[in-house]
Image 1 (spheres, rainbow, N blue to C red):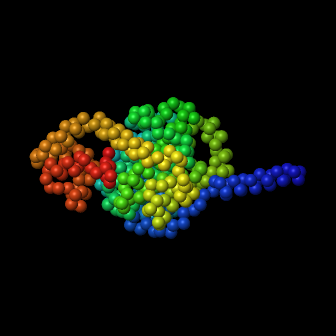
Image 2 (cartoon, rainbow, N blue to C red):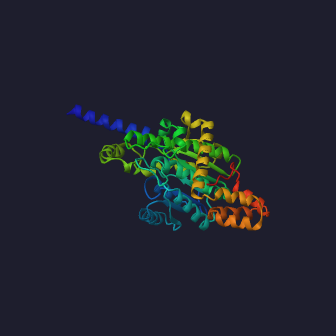
Image 3 (cartoon, rainbow, N blue to C red):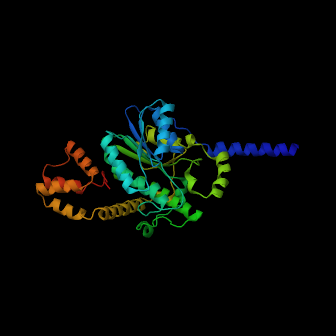
Length: 387
């Protein structure tokens, strides 16, 4: 009997040591208030995202819950408003598995919201399937959707600086790869349905998030926007909701015993979004509320630049497919002429109209129709990358 008690006591001690020494994370120490600030949190109807949104709301921010499921998001917004006492928590529809939805979200946001101070790219999935545009689900949602969203909102972030972009990666980025022959096609993440291949696609997406953050920081150097990627910890969330039933049953006991709860998993995100003095560390990777060394592939600036340029070319191809008259309209506009410029402006997206108006307000657009059009069709990639 005494041996059994010793065994139980030993197991309990081992659990406490492992949980508090390995799995339990640090806490965000920032006490900053966010009155008058606006934040977007993707995937904020549950899990880490909801915990982050709640904390930001308690600090006085206007929080946009950017989510796919309207019913769950509105319920989450109600919970957050009730718990925080902040009525400035609203839902906006965003499906990161659809480029059309991402553009629609950005268009709506830019029309209705005067500022953006914090963008938190949190949403993530791991499982089979494909996006509306034909990409692997994990890669399309975790990386491509956030890449597009960030670029569409980048000008607003610059105008409201100092501002921050926080992108959730994972420790598993170390096992990811950026295989460019695959990235060049719509099969850029593993399309098969096996658990291992779905996990590999997830790892690839998180490595690309680390590289995206690194290259974004290089392009924004000297601006008022800083960006960070992070590992939130091993967290018990709905990330594995696409797993099979037996996998979920196997994982659930481990999650209850060892994984962080969503509040604990939100701390490094909040640290990157709020902690003062992080500006010189733009582009870097954090874990446990501290700067961490990223994996070797995540430190490759040449790879990060190549990935960015590949994504830019893909965006242009998709854009031309969506609007066959794009190139012809651009050439017509560059030839000059008031009527041509006006007709071209009517053909471009609402987002570009908004961008042009904001540029004009800042004195960036020259009144000459031809030169103004050239500025709209050829934005400066080092500071404004539009999709």
